Image (cartoon, rainbow, N blue to C red; front, side, top):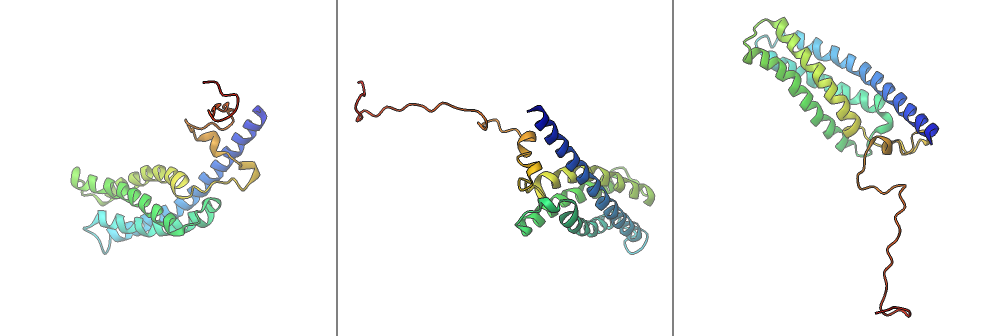
Length: 187
């Protein structure tokens, strides 16, 4: 029992860290896309619209991120319903974009920061906060198809998910119901 549980926990941990590494690689590229485009827009065509520039950069990075995460990071967890998966991904990324754009807007409008480098940095802090939120949301809400098809990960979700009303593995005695029409019934 302990050996099996230990092996399963190690398997889950290994899977988790591989996903984190892939997510980090995709995120690193998306970070460059987001910040490269945002920096260009802040210092060029959208010079007076820093929050909008952050929104555009994040939106382009989001499209890249969905494709890369769907076909690489979480490829074993893709949902069969691509439209639902994409809508969930966009919704979660909308929250992430709101966080990163919100940090830029808060710095500019809330604290009166006018220096473009400080506004750019505020957006980076927002990206870092949003990244943590996105990883767990992707893992548990978007790309959440179970790996039960693979024997080494069969039923691993039962280890980390708690089902308070579950009776799996617990034998419950059947209740005896007496029928008054059957012979031997005592009234």
